[in-house]
Amino acid sequence: MLEFRIKKRDGLARVGTIHTPHGDIETPAFVGAATRATVKALTMKQMHDLGSQAILANTYHLILRPGSDLIKEAGGLAEFSSWHGPTFTDSGGFQIFSLPNVKISEHGVKFKSHIDGANFEMTPESSMQDQWKIGADIHMAFDHLAKSDSYDDMKLAMERTHRWLDRCAVEHEQIKKDSPEIRGLCANQEQYLYAVVQGGTFNDLRAESARFCASKPVDGFGIGGVFTADGMDEMLKTVNSILPEDKPRHLLGMGQEPIDLFVGAEFGCDTFDCVGPTRMARNGSLYTYDGRINIKNAKYTHDFTPLMSDCDCECCKNYTRAYLHHLFKTDEITAKVLASIHNEHFVVQTVDHIRASLLDGTFQEYKSAFLSRYYHK
Image 1 (tube, rainbow, N blue to C red):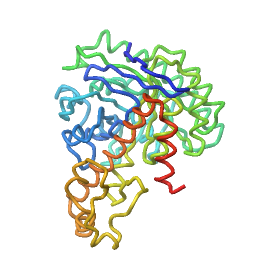
Image 2: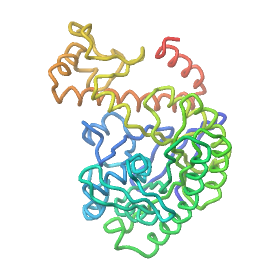
Image 3: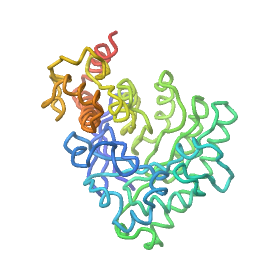
Image 4: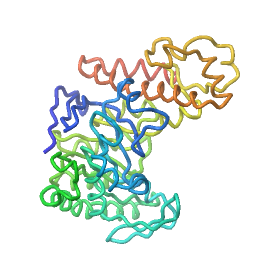
């Protein structure tokens, strides 16, 4: 069983430590979205230097390229990517169910590669096999994401997710006990399984899913699927009031907006991941404590101040807004690198400060001051 120790609670919020084979994660924590075994525009050393504690890769993308067998041959995700810390893999269900012409059955999902049109199939069993080969510390169960937001579709997807979870759990344990050929060079490394709570925007379905997942012999929980930012607090209150306190919870794909991080932590989530911060950075949209700015705007042409004077990332310590503006206007690759360093650092540090404020009892004051300044309220 994955060891998770809670140091302090504040309502549903908690501060703790997840102990993994590749190191500890002090929670709450923002996990870098290393979709294809890399965080776009950043090296793993840069991720470490900006304060990231863990990365999350995507199984769907990795089975397309370079393939789970090659990553197994390399010694697993951490060795392959030279990331010296804890690792997660998402099953890739969100991406697969977002593809056109997906063929869904109780057995699994058939789809075509978005790269070359090659035919693929993923089942709960093959998802577990691929994730064991990839060798992350923590795996997400293969889940069904509804194509529409209707109640009936959400319920059908949730119920199939539950049936698939049972199959994932059986396969996960079978591989752990009897399949060293699948585990490869990671054969002696413990790997852990998270169930995924579904139910979309319907709190009765979320509650049903949370109760089902809580009853299963899993190591933690992902909270995924479709939900709106406006209703996230109520959904998380519903789900995290049901999930057991002694197991960690990961909020999948949330963290582009700072308010997501505060709401997630306040209502009981321990880790978060999102591609948003680096995606926005590559387009010139940069976080500051006074809100996001578009560094491509002409008003920054002669602005020789740091992006943020109170930020200690490599970008802010060494470069001006005018220089960043120049890099983006001339389409230099360095623009994307420096902007990504800053945005990722901003989000990681924000969650680190949330953790510190929960420890010293100042969370509500920190939340109010941060969000009032950021959203100009």
